[in-house]
Amino acid sequence: IPAKIAGVGQIIMVTPPGKDGCVPDAILAAAKIAGVDRVFSIGGAQAIAALAYGTESVPKTDKIVGPGNAFVAEAKRQVYGAVSVDMIAGPSEVLVISDEKTDPRVLAADLLAQAEHDRSASAVLITTSEKLADEVAACIEEQIPRLSRAEIARASIESNGKIIIADSLHRAAQISNELAPEHLELCVDDPFDLLQSIRHAGSVFLGRNCPEPLGDYMAGPNHTLPTGGTARFSSPLSVDDFCKTMQYSYFTAQALTEYKDDVDYFAKKEGLTAHARSAVIRDEINEQIHKR
Image (tube, rainbow, N blue to C red; front, side, top):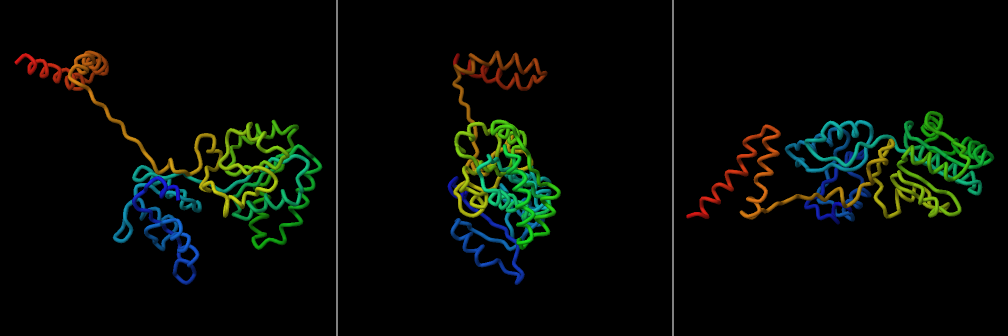
């Protein structure tokens, strides 16, 4: 949708085929609604290569955007330069900041919602309450067996799950800014006030009624987000990613005369005499024409 808003002329989607070898109807319907022009039933690193360099059937593109697994991320890294890419995304992550008032069952559910993505996913809670921290840990153990991806969720929690106790919400915000998470939930009484202390995050979910899965499926902001701390210097995918600018300059003969000596000076300082001559010779020719 951001590409359409930006005025991109042709939008191509690649998606792995289903078990029957066809693109699922739901994906085709979503592509139609989003305004996709062409759909190719390919996925993985090979899809990135096809989009970057072109094939007999897949046209070469100017920009590749969207998430994928570790192989897709590495493929995007390798083709960058031949084509523009949005970002090199790593494993998904959520950080939740909570005071003592949030129901621990809710917090456990939010952490597990991230953990079930894959074994490398990261789920972190920062709370000001030691009691709540213990309750959330117990709720996680209680909820994991109910999940369809329980094995993956448990592996993720054991490897990358953390509960941090901070002495204040201000300190919790400081820690969050150091981690620069992909997803950040602010489960506090006044999330808009705490938001003023947040500088680095991909997407922020405000309040106790705004879990991260709303961002996956329903909320308006784009959900292609910086991961692995890169929110310190990069932003979510937006219309800006599909826009570019160009510069232009125009000098009159009089303006060239005024500045040609400066160009001559700087160019010669760099040892680039042809650069210097390019400006000076024009002024000399203009002067000859003017004298005729």
